Length: 390
Image (cartoon, rainbow, N blue to C red; front, top):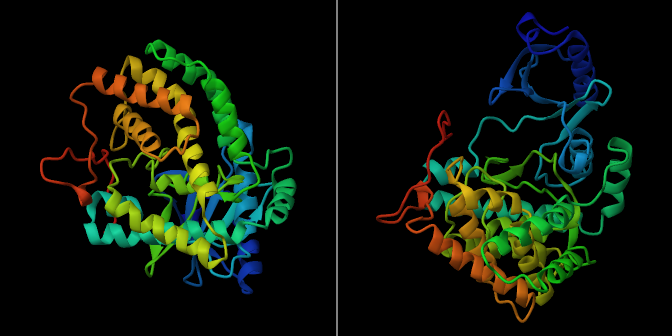
């Protein structure tokens, strides 16, 4: 039975379930000797066992995921699905007790994340780790394509009633009216834009390049182990166009506290590495992929309409900077794409919005990550209490 030092973090029922599940997973009896919250979050707990091994326990929280989907069940399904990958890109799922609301996963340790590198590393380290991150995403996407049925079965079992698709398509739909309202408040023409957003959603919902979408592939949702990247926190994952995840290298990082400018000479090799992983799996990326990525970048902006509406009134801080630099960067990332005649009205509105906001927010500067800083640049802010792992 669990040691006394674990009693403050685990109930008796949880301790019994943990020891039974780990004994089944590892083929030997174990006893929990200690348990400690990770990042001061009581729902994520590192367990120390009498055998000297460790594991991570994650509890169901009293909240739903995006669109009311059960985040616990979605993550349990995704991790069970990814357990079948020969070379893991996620922590291995060791067991779960849905009734108690706990899942047990491989402990990736207290190593560095991409956020640590961007905020406190060096340029060469950032480049190498960004490539490793892109390769992990590419491997996951390439492996998952063509395996939709396996994930669907797990979602039916662990998250009954949950939508199987990525949350982004619904968020874009719900955010269309607020986006158009924000554009109109800036005096911008919106005729025909709603129809193009419908077209954009149809493109993203199409049959091309579908796989497991992480949905929140942020620089701190990963660990580097021996030069390879392992990605965790699949609460908002779902099936859909993998370009949503790939767009994080271009936007960049549209759901992340750890935001700053990501120069093309740094992002470019990572994008190439991502494409190489798909190519190695026999997946070619032609113009259809470029159109899909452009649609994802546009969709991620529309999905942030509520942030845009608030930013028109006042700026607000989040993580490394405020919201306004993010919005200008994401708009520029979309409008800089070669449109090839696609989404002309939405593109014109986004370009006018970017220009109008840049004029309204005179003096605003996009920060650089400290590891990538240029002479005279504004640095991304290190959040209070955050300590990098080097």
